[in-house]
Amino acid sequence: MVSMNVLSVIKDPKLFFKYIRRKSILARFLNLTKGEVTEYLRESEQITRTMLRLTENTKLGAMVSPLRGPIVYTCIRALKPAIMVETGVASGSSTAYILQAMELNKSGLLYSIDLPNADPGALVPENKETGWIVPSELRHRWKLILGRSQEQLPPLLRELRKIDAFLHDSEHTYEAMMFEYETVWPHLRDRGVLLSDDIHWNRAFYDFARNKHPTRWTTFDGLGAIMAVK
Image (cartoon, rainbow, N blue to C red):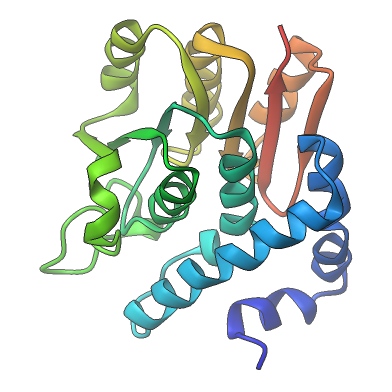
């Protein structure tokens, strides 16, 4: 049976073309075989089904699309980051993908920064807390920091010094996105990855990529990825 989140992609000709190419794009970006990518994408289906079941009457957003969360999951499974930072949590779909990948990697710690309900399109349901869909068995790898990324990200990075992966999914203004990219970039280790959701909202991701001249970067449906080869 094809799930609704997959049907929403394959019914759109442009998205379907990206969907059928995602394995080859990921294999090239991550330097993996298509078989390895296929296995990681298959694994991601478990956490997708769990989230869709838990949120049957709740809008989760685009992260559960086959061109978003599973891509993030595959990057984390392949690159095996020891330390990762994300901005923007809301109900916790991206967080769940990342933590599930880390759990199977048997390593990794995720720091998440979130200002609850700041984005009208990513509201946490009433009587629920930030990241409420994150399974309890994965939370031992998670540290949640509440506040604006502009205030919380710089001191966190100074404390961590170096990180292996970053995901932007908070305020999607040009200024906020560029601030996060520029703030994080010096702290990314060699071969670390910068991921960004909703890159189609403005030109920030493309301008940043053009300025940094990365040797490896790619985009999916609203999701961008840059490899920090330094």
